[in-house]
Image (tube, rainbow, N blue to C red; front, side, top):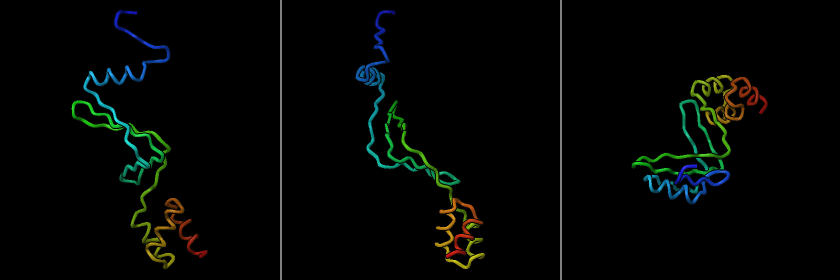
Length: 115
């Protein structure tokens, strides 16, 4: 290998990697967190027990996130109104039933009819 190319078996030594990043003006920092939520137009992406690293390069911050991922669908107001009209239940009850049925209107109506 060429001069100045110091590779360890299995990759770069983490301390050497950190020193190289610092030389290039890149800073990484672990962020202690218990949950990360990303709101989208159709619901939310939730990352539980996340490992979050903030990387700062040339004044710009970016985040690397890993963990257990799950999604939650957003309940539309039209769906809530339909369940309320069909069952005569409250808005909160309709919303809860839709969340439990993962947005399945028919299942939400049936579950409320059983109560």
